[in-house]
Length: 99
Image 1 (spheres, rainbow, N blue to C red):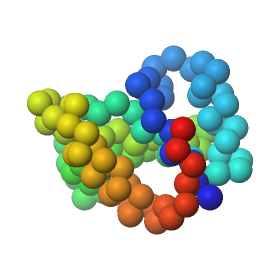
Image 2 (image 1 turned 120 degrees about the vertical axis):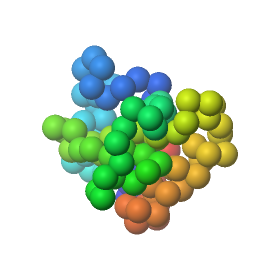
Image 3 (image 1 turned 90 degrees about the vertical axis):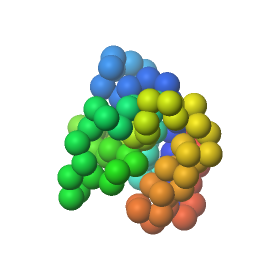
Image 4 (image 1 turned 180 degrees about the vertical axis):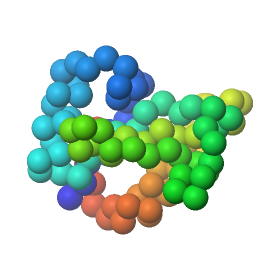
């Protein structure tokens, strides 16, 4: 089973209790941490980076997902939902817990 966590904080902004607890969850669950979206213009697309999100793995083993959208689409819920579904498809997430 996997875990998807949605947060308004950047994973690397300040390491606090939430990151500590989520980092521990990686021992039991494949964990995905969805940050607030960022302007796609701040990222350069390459062969390994999908055009609608940026992915990296934290030192704790958390899959950090940064949705990439145009500046005017930061609050576009249907677009953000589409990105979440794309992540689920790309990582073969079938069952997960949402937090």
